Length: 236
Ligand code: PGA
Image (cartoon, rainbow, N blue to C red; front, side, top):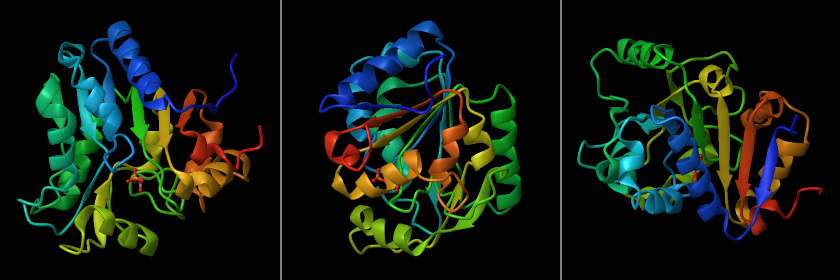
């Protein structure tokens, strides 16, 4: 059995991750995928737009969404995922998160039901500098499901690179750790020197709820796709 988590480091991580996802879709066209936004996965999504037919039978679930933003805000996670990928590849099913729903608890339950219909075959995640997965911040319940959550200060500050002062969201709705940790396969994408410390902490530090990404150490099929700067603190 191969080691999990395994990490793959290379300047060409975008091409490799794209090819690996196309392979998964080819082997299982009705793949159920949970997709992050943020900035890291976007080059992968951009490459995927060249293969729209690959998604024809796939189901896509948005990982998380910021709360309290105008519907027209172009950096809402939903808007980003549509613009960068979904509008180009038109998956058979696309589930977003309605953070403006009158009854947010019902919306969260409906997302859990969407997940329960067939589970998640693959979760493609980014990594917060504090080790968050989606908006599951340090201390999140590893058994938690989709929920409205408060954002950590570093997440609020970090989100300014998307919103450039227009908005300062302090909460969001995220798919919970339970379902991310139970996905058939999990990928974490991390690039750049700002992620080096948390990558090493998540992969080689003690596993615990204080660093949600470290909980993936126990996942049977987890791959980290890293550029060389993000991998500099790893002991090889
Ligand atoms: P990034 O965000 O891909 O923009 O670095 C990742 C995250 O905070 O989860």
